Length: 504
Image (cartoon, rainbow, N blue to C red; front, side, top):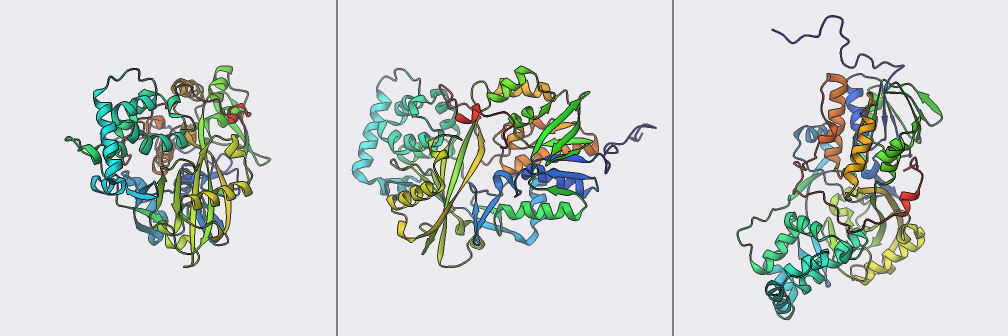
C-alpha cells in the first residue's frame, strides 16, 4: 500500500504563489536559511531585513578593508545537514582553522582548558601554596549559608582561587556582583563547565572525573561569517527570491487566526506563510490588533544581555596568536579580546597591522552602552595598554559596534513568559518563529539555521516538527550546559522600558 495524497487534497506548499509568497522577517542566519531553502525549491519568497546589512548578530563589519567578526563565530556543528549546507554555500571559501584560546591573568597566559603544570608554573610556589592552604581551609571549615555564587564557590575552592579565577570574569559577564548571583546557578554551571572542572583538577587532581576537551579546529569563511550570509543572499536572488534591505517590519495584520498582511518599508505584502526571526518582544509589539494584555506583559518581561565590540587596528604584530583570550583581570572592563588575523588572515588587508576586537558586556541603555564611540575607543586603547598587550600610541584607528539582544537571559520567570507568548502564537496558523531571538533561546548559528530548516519542512513537506523543541536539550553543543538563571534579583534594564515594537 502506497502513501499517496488523497484525491482532491491540496499538496503542501501549493498555496505559495507570487501574489502570496512566504514572507521571512529578519535577514540573520535563520531568516536567510529559510529564504535560501524556499528559493531553491522555486517558491516565491521575500526576506525582509530592517538594516542595510544581512547577517544579524553574525554579520561581519568592514572598515577600510579590515573585517571584524562580532563575537567570534566558529562554524562547528554536530548537525550534518547544517554542515552540508555550510559547505554547499561556501564551497572552497570555507577554511579549516586551528582553534586556540587562553586565559589572560596576572600578565600571564594560561592554557584553556587549564593544565596542571602550566598553572603551577604560572602561579609560582608561593601563590600556589597560598591557594592550596585556602582550598584546604575551605574543605574543612563548616559551609554555613550558601545563598550566593561567591559563598558557594569560596566554600568549595577557597577564597584565593575564587578571587583569581571566578570573581572578576563572572561579574563582568553578568553585570552584577557575585553576591547577587544565585548559589544554585553556580552549582549547576560549575558542575558542567570544563573550565571549572579543569581548574580544580589542575591543582588537586581529577579524582576520576573525565574533563571534556574542546575542539581543536573549526570551519570559517575566508572573509568572516558575513561572507556566508552575503553569498546566501546572492543565491536567493539568483533563484528568483527577494532579499530587501532597510525594510523594517512595522505591522502584522492578523485576522481569523492568520497573518493576512505584513507591512514593511511602506509596502503591504499578503503572505501565504510568515517565518519570523524577530525577537518575540517585537513580534508581539507589531501585532494588529494588539496581542492580549498578558501576552504584552510577558513580552515586556523578557530580558537580554547585550555587548559591544571596540575594534582596534594596531600597527605592528598581533599581541597574541590566539583566536581570542579571556580577560581574568580586575581593573579593566573588557571581558574577551579577539584577534581577527588568527580567525582568517584574509580578515586583515595587509601584513603589517593587527586587527583586534575588544568585547564589553553590558545592558542596552546602561552607562557603558551609552558612552560615545570616541570615549569607548579611548577606553579600549587605555585598557589594552594597561593589560600590557599593546601600546595605545600604536592604535591607528578604532570604531564601535553595539550588538543588541546578544544573549537571551533565562531568569526565573522566563519560561512562564515564553509559554504565554507561545500560547498566543499557536493561534496564528501561518506564523512560525525561528532563530535565536525568535525563540528567545541561546542558540548558536547552526541551531538557529536548524530551526529554519524544520520550519521550511513543515511548510513544504507537511511535517509537524516542533520548532520550539529544536536544541532544547543542547544536544548539539560542544559542551552540554544547562540554561539556568544567574540572578538572585533579576535587573530591570533600561531596554525593558522601551516600546515593544522597537527597531531592534
